[in-house]
Image: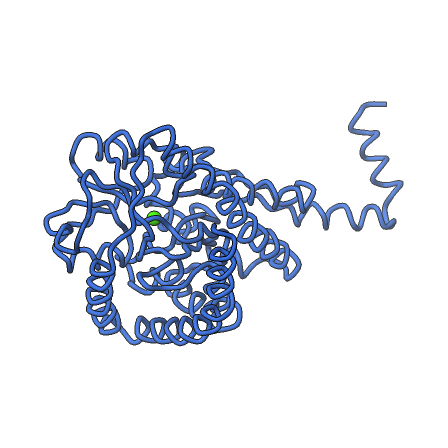
Length: 362
Ligand code: CA
């Protein structure tokens, strides 16, 4: 008997049984996803976190949902990820949504804004303060659906060739700083530049920029910014808990079953937690190594500099709210949560850590 006859006979023999009914149903639910990212292949934390999410989604479904992952420049350039997914050419991106603030300033709030929220604070806003609903409303205008999918925690203030003793030192400074933080230093006389991670080192080495921020000690050490700038400042006012985003084509998302949506949510929630844990676990040792092995000089911004950041940020936020009713709505919801949650953090996490470290001499 020829092979195709065996197959024909097999199907006929099984006709009407549960096996035949369920097999095509499973086949129909196979989903192949093209995912792009704003991070280089295997870049620790951001890239590996996005790749870990993609692998998790495939593992959780025994390969039924297959994710074909493309790092920055493997399919599209980093900053073309938004259009690739909004247009439906790809189904998912992993990115920092503040990269899209040129399309609408509201996007910045779903990554991090100056004087914004820490990781635990933004988690509270997103889930219980109306943040996710506003992210949905904004994203829908662009044909997208986004979910939190990672967080870097508080970022460092950046790498500088000279000491930044006062706010005046920002005048004339060309600094890589995306998001609304860039607008804040522009008010202080600096020229902010937005570059993807992989472009920063060469621009810093060539002198095309004077300074840069990126993430924190663990991530920054891989890019070797210390070869061009030795002064490493903290804390960054511009990104106090940067949330990464899983952006999906909305038609793709709306067409999924409730169960597949729940699986994707769970995979993204897991990454949101795991990435933050990884940054906290690795930043301390990385900072110690930067100081001991690379001669990095750690400095904190002065109160005077921080006051100037605050004044400039107030001007930026006044302008953002004038952009559109949507921008104003997002800003006001964000501020309400920041102030409410922040008042609790002040007498809980902040007060406790301060006393613990004082008593233990940490
Ligand atoms: Ca950053």
